[in-house]
Length: 212
Image (cartoon, rainbow, N blue to C red; front, side):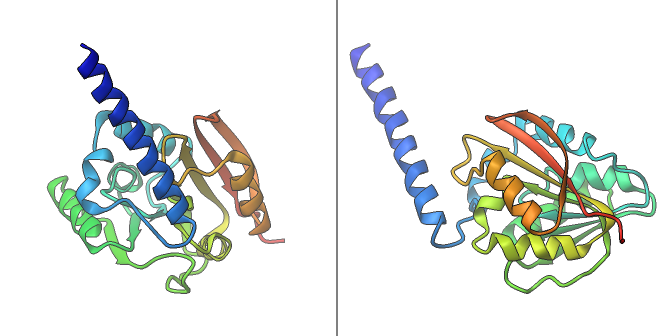
């Protein structure tokens, strides 16, 4: 029993140490979740939280959605179902392996309204303007080195009145506080519309003000 408890303690300390190292390293370079760790993203709890986040943005058929840092598509796939017919989801990621998983999942689900784009925000690579009704950043903001430019790019990509939905989870090594998220978004021109959840797991919806 003592040996078992020792192993548990060592494991917990090791995981905590790895998370702290990852968080510190992420401040100096972009460190997204590797594709081979996608099992952390694909689980019933993550899927449930994704559906909850999507439900807070009033998606409707015909809308265009930008899923930034789409990962394995836990936001992309259910969003694509909700904006059909006539709508589209652009799944954006810097890892080809993740985009391949999203494309495969879309095909398996019979979805033809998902478009994958290999690019990162905050790099000047994504330049669509006034093109999207909704944008999602789900545990991704902390992975972006130039957060200010990334949010400016999302602001430009959204239509006036469009909504940016940001979700953060405390256990994520890239976790950003509510205060940080609000400050960065408001500096980019967004207006806070609604906050859901607690400090441990929250969603904040921001609106791009209508023209004029």
